[in-house]
Image (cartoon, rainbow, N blue to C red; front, side, top):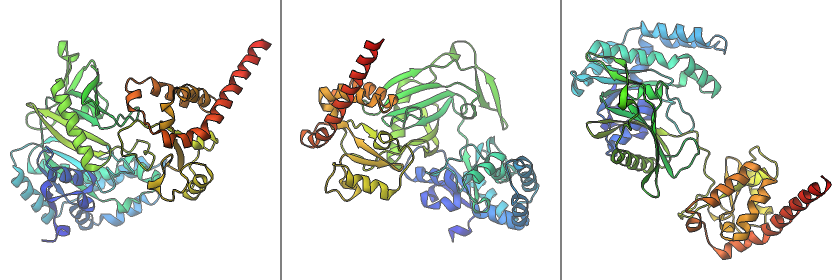
Length: 460
């Protein structure tokens, strides 16, 4: 059967190539299921079902007419009008029949999580997380069909419309799939980042954990425990135990409720160290599978970990290219900032600077560059091998204090790290090229700064 004509696809039938059929969330769940990760069973209502729903109710022209005049001051009214129209529209009989058949195959006595999965979400260049609706602990054919229709309507929440306008994404080109997944009723759940989202440190896994369903954490209703795991040492680096005052729990018969957490449980660590380490290692496996840092939703039930979503972290600044293949410590300084050129420059401008600067002579491709890396339209000098020299470890921070105080402090912090001396890049022959050029500049800058300070003290 032609997959493009199917209204439902189970996770094991889906992978990352099916983005246009099942959206970002659905494609990731299928990809992880096929890769053998512990994903609760489920299926997707395809974008074909959404398309035929629109056509069956003559909604394409209606949406186009209403949304063509969308502006910042009338988004709320427009979104409400479209959502109301979609919620009152009929699901075509064939679409309804296939969804019900899939529910029966998945087990109609089960409770399900029903989640929106738009074709423009969970992508490497944009994050639509939380813009469309999610319905938890849903049971029964009518209730599930209503939740599917509500997910379709949520493609036009105020936030989603505004985000598409700001990112120049055409409304008509975004389609909606719906994920229907067996509900896990966890004791603990949360979010895991396979790179620290605060510092950007890619060697740290950061885990947020709280009691009950993860929606309380995602929506900001609770303060979670935060665990930091060091990838290199394969060990827990730090734990911050929060005062957890409430949790969201499922209700028998459907829906959820807020429950107050009191006593010793409120201030206790919600996960054992063994489960934290197990979860962090699972996160690193998922990161390796996708080839980039991941934002992962997870839960823990009866001692078993489940993954309910994974998406690329879009907020990290890209690493300078080419990425070193060794495990040594690398420190990059922005050449653009030395020259007070903080805005990105063109690829041609980067190539010209690489020709002018006296490093990497003879290099003519990205893979050949040793010292001059590029990222986000800027040039970075790899200073790592200079740091093997004690004198330069002292002189570089002083030099950078005249350029950028934050850069200077960051370099001082780097040199103070316990593993610095064992991990710093050491290659004396190559370092001499950079040292020959940089050392006179650094020495003269430090001398000038010192002389200026001495004159200021004398005059005072």
